[in-house]
Length: 432
Image (spheres, rainbow, N blue to C red):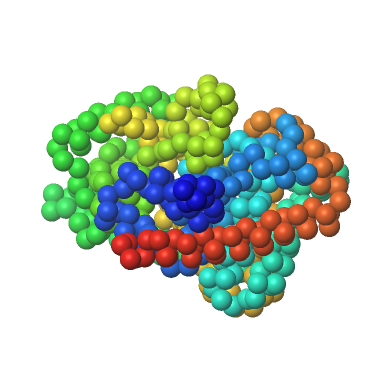
């Protein structure tokens, strides 16, 4: 009888949440996902965004430095250090920022800020170069950089939202390397082959792709043709592209098997190639914890998840993808965007000096602040100024604000480590 009174215990909540969230996966897919999660507490955190939202949605502490109308913005919704990456600007040059919007939604800025702070501590732990105290200091550096950008925007020096904020030397070297022409050549050499008849198609050497069967391919191409006709009607450059091939991401055994994904190879008369990423979109994890009334309002604003993804991308990104859009295929909603050869993640394990890691933390804080200003610009106009001015009021006292971010990041990172150990004990025998 006593055990019936212990459902509230943390370990039981974690186990039940993991089971419920992953119950639709095949055993092979679940094994692959859980093996990834078992690598470190940081990888566990990456794959359990739903746990973060379970614990923080409508947290009372939001009211201490926000929780009001004008501290809302477009959130990335899954902010961690590996959701920053390189991507092309409007001129095709590599820049850096958040480039994943599958979990994006409108909410209080602190959700992203706390999530990023937690990820910094766990990332330092995974790399094992820095102590817990150093990791916590890096969180404070990140939050201070965030605070400075918003305070300057509100009070003295408005930010140019079309520009990428100052990057660390490490990131500048990283982008310079990616910007070499060989990066793009190597991408298409890996992804594309020329057939005996001269046509181009996805390379059969790619182990993660498989062809669609004839029925599904015909259905998809018909839907995609309608999308091209309607969405690209006013874009002469886009209308010149024709579909050359389509392939499906193998899901059995993939760690991301809960999300269906296709790739479309397109080309034009000048033999310019593009790979489009067609990705199934789900309800953001935060929505699982909304009240019925909140969810109804959400559905009124975003009738489907492809539209939400498109609006989030346009709001947050400094350089929205010209191919951006969405389709409905086989009863599911899919986002459309280019799979850029310039998209790469910065490997933080290459940073072995704490000063260099702090430089990265500053860059993450600046980037998040600018992206929140862009998101708020979409909501409130005036270059995001209402958001910045509200922040300047609620977060007036810098040290108190930084203490809060640091404390939440430290304590929840420790909680994630404990959850990770519970996960290993519960699931390692069958899946890891």
